Length: 305
Image (cartoon, rainbow, N blue to C red; front, side, top):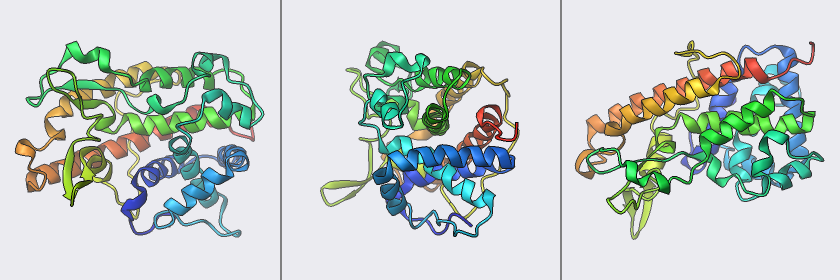
């Protein structure tokens, strides 16, 4: 098993790794070799980030030995690729491509002088009564879905292996982000002051500091790296290159989930709330893995072909 007992110190990185590794199950040997080649590109030029990832996920992700099977090595590298975008948020896009000796792809040129920090979320705002606040849309700084569209267009274009490595890593990471409800929803007041997707909505304090916020709780709600993720046929399956179809589905589903994201009367310890959250989060993780598996079939090139 790549994933062992859970340690909360690296929840985000391990969560993405679990999804990507599970999604790779069933890939051809040629696709596994392609993914390892992508991982080698990023490992070579981002060695400090890789060491940081290994340190922070050492309790969840076991490094395969030299004699490990190709599938096990590919699963480990898939986890690294999927985590990498969280480790380089503050670097400009053009700098990332330059680091691997490549130019920024044409479909991403509009973002080349910006960091990718706003690519991880898309905010739709609701008040404490779960009423949609359309007037607050101007406060949405998230570019998650615009980035997904641009990345998919790039994957369909003629890219070098080094360009593919970066674009593919971004794409599978943001597909995972898009399935976490609080990457889509924020609670706001009438002044449009919001909680940044639950990041400033404290559920548990340790002294004067918040030890668990709503965003972290929903990241962790269904997390059990020991159990493999169940890959199911994707509902409303879309052909390769049609991400707007499933993006529309995700936004609609997020709106339906709003009533379940925040505990009534701020009662985080309510057993019904916690049980419901675990069920929803498990379903979202499975959906993310299933959709990522579909995307890998579309865009992970087979070296034998």
